[in-house]
Length: 189
Image 1 (cartoon, one colour):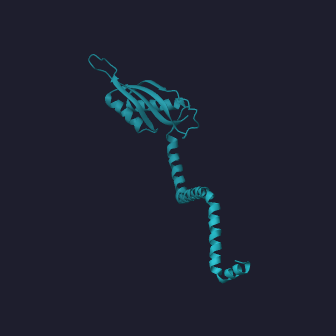
Image 2 (cartoon, rainbow, N blue to C red):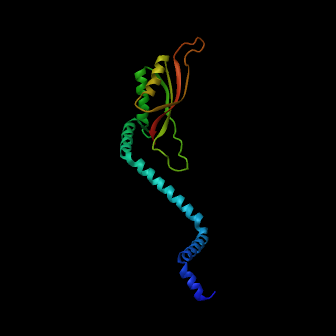
Image 3 (cartoon, rainbow, N blue to C red):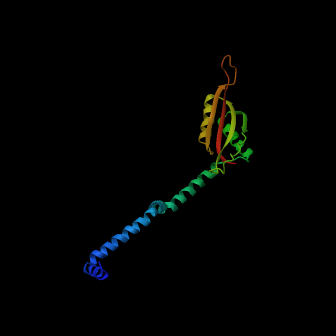
């Protein structure tokens, strides 16, 4: 076939020749770009995940100001009810006040030492439990009233251990009862 015959054939079938050239070009492009397909797929997944995260952030941020106001109000409510580890006299006075109100007798009261913070990093909250050991004597109803006032008092209280025993004559089982409590009050160090 000569050059003139080839040119005549191409001029006679321009659509077929154009489609053939296009098919060859697409095949070559597919062959040379197929090695970049996994990287492009990973980038698409990454960008899609980022887009979904941003969409979720926009949706969740709709009520952000109301939630911040609710948290600030809750913090203002908690703040007056916490104790501070360094205010030992004030902390112990809380228990003496309950003693006077209930008619019981405190025989041992002390604030336990704070546990050192772990070296893992900063604490997640600014609040921690301030531990106390309390030994109180009195009648059964007075001791229950003492516990009730701790639970419903002006500070948040968590009783860790409680042991009740007879403190008087154990032979004939007379005398007042003794209540030994280990508890935590919500506080800041």
